[in-house]
Each structure stands twice: as structure tokens, then as C-alpha cells.
Image 1 (cartoon, rainbow, N blue to C red):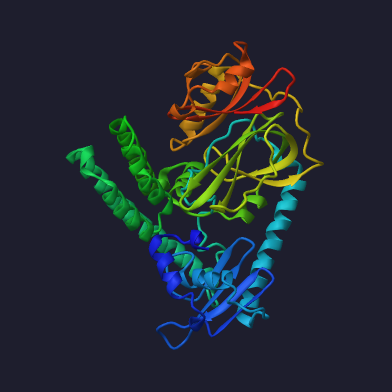
Image 2 (cartoon, rainbow, N blue to C red):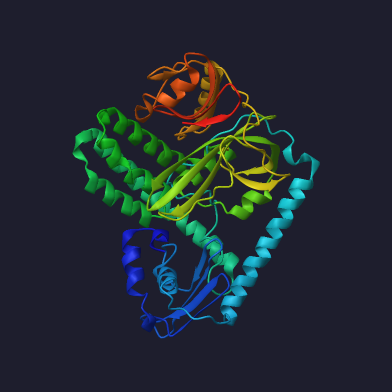
Amino acid sequence: MLALAPDAPSQKAAQRVAGPGKWPVCGATGDVVFGECEGSGAKPYLACVDLTEPAFRCSCPSRKFPCKHALGLLLLWSAGGVPDAEPPEWAAEWLAQRAERAAKAAARAEAARAAPSAVAGIGPVAGDGFVAGDGSGGDSTGVVAADGVAAGGGAGTRAAGADSGRRARVAAGLAELERWLADQVRQGLAGAGERDWDELAKRLVDAQAPGVASTVSRLARVRAEDDWPGRLLEEYTLINLLAVAYRRRADLPEALATTVLTRVGFPVTREEVLAGPVVRDRWDVLGRRDEEQDRLTARRVWLRGRRTGRPALVLSFAPQGQPLDASLLTGTTIDADLAFYPGAAPLRALVAARHGPQAALGDGVPPGRTPDEAMDEVAAALAADPWTTTWPVVLAGVIPGRTTLGGFPLHPRDHDLWRLLAVSGGHPVTVAAEWTPHGLRALTTWDDEGLAVIL
């Protein structure tokens, strides 16, 4: 439950309101938890959580999401302190509104999938709309909270006003960030430390720019590396570029402006993505990688379409220690519709629908590209979205070395891939890998019988 908190102060505040005495009225039914939390005013705060998303609703004025009341209610529920009960009218109304929106989104998605033009004009060019740990999760430009519903009536008007207010706060926070970065370059890169970055990240969270805050909070890792001066300057440059792009987003092409908003941390809902166009193909599951990110485990699963040649990234998250989605197995092929998150070079996708069972292991070696073609693909992705930090490539006919693969340097963490060297035996092989600015990270290769070997 605490992993859902936006920051450490929210965790502490949630624990303070998680006692039974704070919740004279509370209950749970099915996948919904609701309650009334006593506050400083005469009226209690009304909190409700839909556990299926999860999605949150609270009548408090907090700008943090989820707020301490929703988190406190979840803590009380997880400890067995919430009895079974039917939801009150205000909670039932919220759930009905969510169900209605979900039904409409599903209908739009079905209509889009049924339309002959749903996949027309979609070619193999793709890009990354996601930064690990940026908090975007893919959410949308113009959604307040997880479901876009404010407490009480007139939700649409208040949502629009809240969105305008948020954009103003983000603009102010990023203007301060630009000044801070200019000072760092003027005073010297060695002047800032972990405490400075932590404070800056907290101010960006308060400014409701979680994507940028997450990037800033990871700068301490860069400082710990041997080549940190050049790496830190690169990170400062990309952060400054994002702040300037946000300030000038009205002059950008629509797709690039959407990418900027996503990188900053504006959400796009799952329903919106599924309601958009889909791409049907036979998708090879190239490999996956799990990483710890901000108290969550993130699973990246890479796919590539056999017909379109289009790469895709399917992301899933879970609190540390909890199971992740394991439905996409490396080395298999699925016939599916993918819905891509919007952006200048869309890469992150949702599996909208599957057609038939997932193929068995050993379905064959996926089509690969030459190193030059792969480099051109990466260059096109970076040109469309300069904040891209990872990209899937499938290299065909390459002979792996100790520190290189098809002319690409290997990532420092991936040197001496003995399993890849053993499968190759000095002969050309097909290898799926993640491109990063610091080298390739090998994922999978295929042996002489076409069976996938996870690296």
C-alpha cells in the first residue's frame, strides 16, 4: 500500500490516519473500499478506492495523488480493519460513473478495432513514449487524478480548471528548474550533491511534474559512476531541453507536444489508449527485463511485429515482492491487437485483444536487421523523441565479441556474455537487445534449431 504513495511524507501522513479511530464509518465490498475520515473540519473526508486499477477518490483538497486519506484507508483495509458493507450513496455514484466511462471507452475501442481504417497508414516507424520511473505510466494530458473525477458535482468544469491550474504550477516549477540548471553550469558540476537533487525533486513533485522529479532524483546514481562529469552534463542538457520544450509546447507539432507532456508527467488513461487505433500483427516476444523503480518493480517486455516490423514495449508494475504479469513469454509469438500510447514516436503499448492461443516456444527466429539498419532505426527514434533512453533492436547475422555486438558496444553491465558466446561458437547469430546510450543490453538469442536462449 505504501508503494502507491507519491513521496515519503505522504507515507508518514497515511500511517497517522490509518487507525480505526480515524474512520468511524468504513467498509469494503468486492473490489471497493470506502470510508469517512475525521479531519480538522466539521465534515469528514469521503474516501473511496477501486482496487482493480487502483483508482482513488477523496473529498479533501490535497494536490497529492493518492492523498493520505486514500492511502490510510488502504492501510487499514490491508490490516483487516475494514468490515464488509454495502457502499453509501456517494461511493455508489462514483463507481457508477466509472463503470459508465469504462463502458463507453470499451465501445469506442471495439468500434475502432472493427473499422477497416483502424490500422491504415501505420507503418514500422515507432518510438518510446516512456521514461522508466517517470510516473507517466502512460497517463494523459488533461486528466485530474486517476479517473478524472473530482468530488461532488460539476466535475467537468472543475477538472478543466484544475488542469489549467496544474499546467501553471508545472510551468512555474520548470522555470525554477531552468534557473537552477543555469546556476549549476555556471558554478561547476561538482557543486551539487544528493541533498540538492532530493530537494529539487521534492519541489518538482509539489509543482506536479512527477516525470521530471523522477529524473532528477536519479542523478545521484550518475554521480557515482566513473565518467560522471560527462554523464551529468548530458542529463542536465536533456532535463533543460524538456523544460524549454514544455515552455514552448504551443509551437511544437501536436505529437511532440504530447510527448513533452507525457515526459513531464501528465497522465493518459488506459481507457483512452484502448479507445484509439490498434495494430494487429503476429508479435514476437523478444525478451524482458525487471528493474526496481521507486519502491516498485517494473517489467519491460519487448515485442516486434512480423508483418509491420514495428517494435512495442509492454510495461507492468507491482510492489516489490509481489508477482508481475507473466503472460508474455520470451520466445513465443502472439497474434494480437496492440494499442499504442500517443507521442511523437510511440513505443509503449497495451495488448487490446488476442486472436487465438499464444504460439509455442520454437516458433522460429524473428526477422532481424543489419547493424546499420538498426542504427538508422535508433537514430529515427531519437530524432522524434530525444528523451528516448532505451530501444529494442533485433540484429541478424552478427558474431558477438567480448565487448561488442555487431559494431555496437555492449553495456558495461553486460560484458562477457558467456551464454551468447557459447551459442554463437564464433558463428553469426540473431540477437535481440535493448539499445541504451551506454551500449547494448543483450536479451535473447536463438540457437540452430530456432529455440530462444535467454541471456
